[in-house]
Image 1: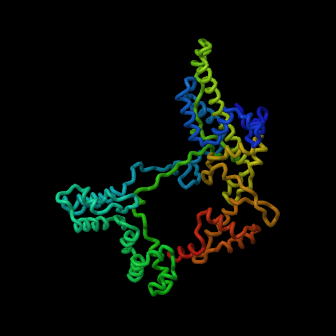
Image 2 (image 1 turned 30 degrees about the vertical axis):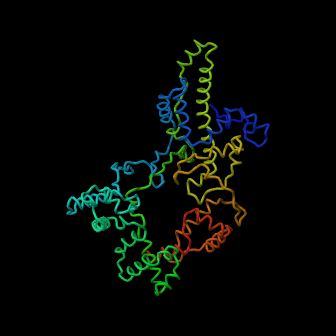
Image 3 (image 1 turned 60 degrees about the vertical axis):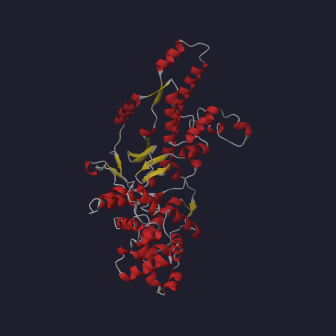
Length: 470
C-alpha cells in the first residue's frame, strides 16, 4: 500500500501540514493528528503502541506468517553482496566463518564479588572476616565508603560491638585490596591510597603534598599557585599533576559498568549492483493484521447496538494501514538520503554532502515538517556506523572554489588533522582554521572550537600535556 505521507497522487502533503493558520489547523482530523504523532515516535515506542492496540482491540492479531513470507521474498531478491556482520566498532565486515565471534555470556564480577574473593584467601578469624564483609557490603558503586564507620560496626551484628580501633584496622584491611583506592571515604583519601603506583619517590612525595595540603589548587589546575606554595619549579609540578591525573577517582566503576543504551536501526544500507540502497530492518516492523474471521462474524451478526465494535474495526484497519504508511515513508526518505550520500558510504564523513530537508521533501512530494518527523529518532546502519537519519542533513558551507561542503565533512577533516599531529606539537584552533583555509575552506576560529568540542577533543594545551604524560 502506498504511503499517504508521500504519495502525491492521493493527498498532497501541503493539505495536511501543520501551519499557524487557524483555518488550516482545523482541517486536521484527530486521526491525522495521531498519525503525525506516531510518525515522529521511535520504532520502539511505535511498537509499544501497536502492542497496546493488540491487547485492547479484538479485531487485531499478530501476523505470525508475515515473517516467513518476508524471509521467502528476501531469498528471491538478487543480492550480490554477502550479509554484513556489524561489529562492536561500528564497522561492517563480510560475514565469513573467520569473522564469527564467540561471546562469553558469563556476567562480569561485581566489585563486592571481586573484593570477597580476595578476603576469602586471607588468614582471618571469624570476627575480622565479618567486619571486613560488612565494610565491603557498605561500599557504593564508586568504591567509596560513604557510611560512618560506627554504623558499619553496628550492622555487622557482632557481640561485643567493635570499637573505633578495631573498625579502623578492618578498614585498612579492605583499603589494601585491589583495586587501589577502594574503601576511601573521600576523593583525597582515594587518590592518596593510589600514590604507591607512582614509582619515582620524589614525584610521589610531591604528589602527596599536593593532595594533602593543596587539593583546591590541584583541582583548579593552578600550576602557578602550586609552584608558589610548594616552592618547586613548574616542570616538576606539571609532572606530578600529570601523575595524579592518571589515578582513578572511581575505582569501583570498572566492576559496575554503566548500562548501555542499544540502538536498533530502522533501515539498513546494503550494496546492490554497485549502489547503496536502503532496506527496512524487519525486526522493527510490527507484524499485525485484521482478524478476518472476527470481521466475518461481526458483519454476519451486526445490529444497531454494535457501535463500539464497529469503532474497534475501523481502528484496527487504520492501525494496519498506519504501520504500512509509516514504514514505507521511512524507507522512501532513507532511500532519497542514500541516493545523495553515496560518497559518504564509500569514503566516510569527509565525503558528506550538504543536504536540506527541502530537497528530500520536494522529491517525495512531502512537506518539510514530515521529513523532519521521519528523520527524528530513526536510525540507519551503514558501513561507517549507525546514525540517526537527521545526521545526514546540514547546511552548505562555501569553499574558495565556489562549491559547497558540509560541517560533517569539515569535522571529519579536523579529526584527521588532529590525529596526524606531531607528538608534543598539537594544533591550536587558530592553526586548524589556518590549515582549513589553505585547503579552500574558510572556517572561523570560533567555529573550529565549536566543531572540536562536538568531536569531544581536548584543547591544544591539554593534548600537549597528555603527550608529555605518555
